[in-house]
Image (cartoon, rainbow, N blue to C red; front, side):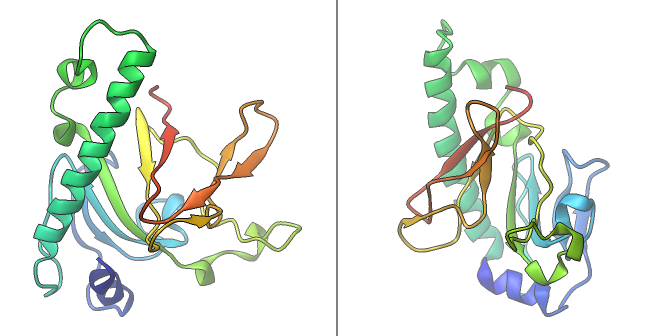
Length: 187
């Protein structure tokens, strides 16, 4: 993944393979600022509906991305099973039975933040760069995994609305050993 992001950052390719007519179904690579304001400070790859693809001479990219997709889908199924229990749905696997196979309607991103692309007006009074506007993902759930070994404190800037709804707080941890689960607007 990092090798492909480096190749993208070095300008090795133009926005590539962006296939799809809307943001919910697009797949491909994009540079900083492409597609929407949400990518003003991000570059990377979008995979929709089970799609993987080769990229820029990075050997095995599609296989590596398929492995990530399979792992992320397994975690998503576990989270959805927990939601089904919490919601007291009568049927195991309700989300996939109602919506179809998870990989057929999911989207995942491999992104890198580029703070140098931040506008001066996106710096808070305490000097923090706001690299992604406040939003709710248009999904049932979103899973966020930061590319850092192990588990470390803090969310590298990722914040969520406090349960009271009266402010924002940084997520407590990040790293390969942490999955931050966010409720999307559909839920």
